Image 1 (tube, rainbow, N blue to C red):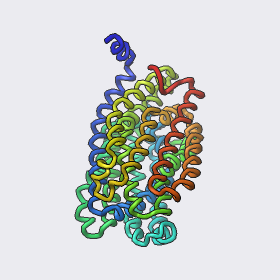
Image 2 (image 1 turned 180 degrees about the vertical axis):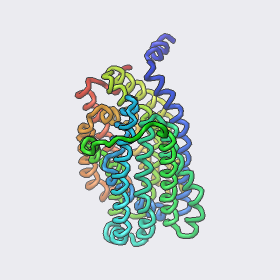
Image 3 (image 1 turned 135 degrees about the vertical axis):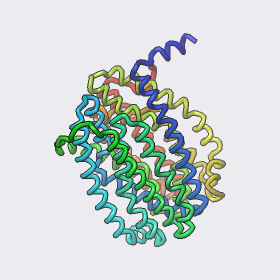
Image 4 (image 1 turned 45 degrees about the vertical axis):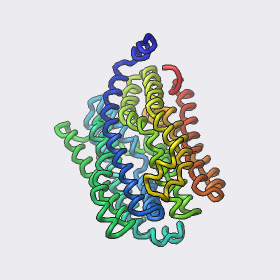
Amino acid sequence: MNKLKQFFGKFDAHTIEVFRGSGVALVLRAVGAGLAFLLNIVIGRLLGAEGAGLYFLALSVTSIMAVIAKLGLDNTLLRFIASGRAHNDWGQVKGVFNTGMRIAGITSFAAAGVILLMAPWIADSVFSEPDLTAPLRWMSVGIFSFAMMTLLAESLKGLKRIRDAMLVSGVIYPAVALVIIWPLVGIIGASGAALAYAFGTGVGAVIGLLMWKRATRMKGSATEFDKSVLWASARPLWLMSIINRAVLPWAPLFLLGVWSTAEDVGIFGAATRVALLVSFFLMAVNTVIAPKFAELYAVDDIEAIGRLSRIFALLTTVATGPLFLLLILEGDTVMGLFGPEFSKGGAALAILAIGQIVNTASGSVAYLLMMTGNEKDVMIASVYSVLTLVFAGMFLIPQMGLMGAAITAAISVVVMNVVGVIYVRLRMGVWVVGKI
């Protein structure tokens, strides 16, 4: 009992604020995760492993292009909007939003056009899957809509509109897609699932924009934000985001599509989405804790940053434990929910889950570095991780197929987090794991 009192006695006002925000985020993240999980099961059941493989290949290409097109502006917008709000500088808040969204809108629209035109070549020459052309063309529209949706969600986080951000980034898209996917798949097969994705993310982006306008109404006028300042922060984050949000999550699936069958890709894509549930609690906390890190760093409270990161690394790991054990021990059963063809992916799921539990145990290390001006360290950690992925993937995936892709993905996640923990210690003298 005394130890419990000592533990909870360390919860200061900042910790309690993150707890409250995380509670809202957790509920909405749970709803979003449930909808996304159900959507993936529906895709697997409706399309089978091979059809799901075509869908995931199209999704990998468009997701990679969307990340590239955003130019690393996700966390840059979050950082400057959170800082401007903390100082009640609404001119900066609106100025950085307008500048960032305008630039990303142009680049993502252009990227969508490129993929639309190159879809036949990508399908035939890269993946040797001619049937991929139509789904890829339909999903190319989602490059623009997904980019806008995610940037609006990050901007809303910067305003501490956590509920709105979570609705935009995690709930609206799968909810809309679930409603329309049944008739669309019945009419045009895998292309219907791709169209459901594009339409769902588009609805999410429109609603996100309406939420932003409501939140910033009557807050003054935007001031011109220096593009060079924006780019100085976004440039290192761009490479980092390409690695963390494009290469690391999608390269194993992409390479599996090159060297294996669409069926293996479908199974691996489903397993990847299940494994991400292990980091469910961490993602909910990250939604709230990232702007809090920026706020604490602005007032030079490094001690509070360290304490906050350790508390939530411990809590998220403990909360994740039961799910992790389920995926390790009953992976075949869980994968069987997607259909009989998917059951053989249980071992791959267990390996992917190990990578995600390391990610969870490391806490919000990447956000801590990014929100404290150490974007270059995140980039370096990302480079180590992607080099590991490339070498492991080139050796393991051609030889081991599905299992090789799972091992490659897990190792790269572990390297990214371990290097990040070391950099936080070197730069700030803070351990993000250990005693609180």
